[in-house]
Image (cartoon, rainbow, N blue to C red):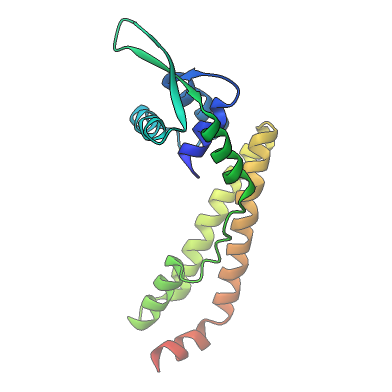
Length: 174
């Protein structure tokens, strides 16, 4: 996810302080991985330097001065271009899991056990996501569906690999 583009998009509704941007980000996108304040301010500094935002006002407070940021026309154009550009599908052609399975086979470890352990971890995560989806709002349901579909594909791959493990062992050991 592009943090800069996301913060720019949040600014399209009007100027905000860094604290407000962090809160809005975490509310909409950061349930599993909230932003750190330092990340917000370093990103805003970069966006300011690149002319994508401007300081709309500065307020004195008990602590450091609070800057209010506004998106510029260049920032609006940048967000529009980013939104229009499709994301590159990730084919996972060289996954860590595949690497572990091949290494297990090459080192005479139990690759089937590795697959079983991974399957159990996927199922554990899927149960948690299913519960979150059941009790969540529409945004949670959509986010969970996305993750669940990917995990289901992984499970199919785990089953297929388990079924072909003998052939894979033969292929990697020759």
